[in-house]
Image (tube, rainbow, N blue to C red; front, side, top):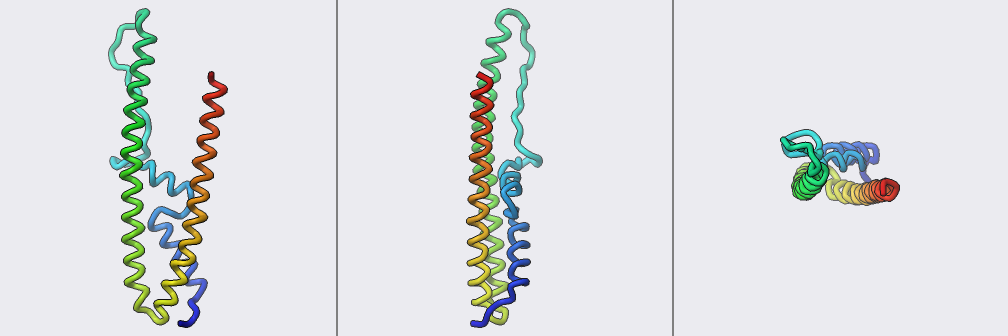
Length: 148
């Protein structure tokens, strides 16, 4: 088992991560929040026809709460589907890479080195996504705290 070419391996890992939409934390988050109808998920708030009298404010609050709950449910469902799509894409890409690379000269060593480096990159990516998620939670709790 001879050593593999580092330059070729680095570009292969970069291309793999880009093809799977795992290049960086922002790309992952965008892929997860991508709607199956295209574009990014976004909340919709529709007031509809209503009377603007003394009951308008409680009615708007109730509509907002109900629609926010519906959006949270849709978001959780779409995030699950997006994660499944990302997982399937990455799994298929790994299987394709495995089949293509195993038959090359020193294929087993190349695949082993690729998967070792890929694992390290994915660990770094996971930490980055978790950091961004934590920052977003912190910003949200600060904005909720200052708004109340």
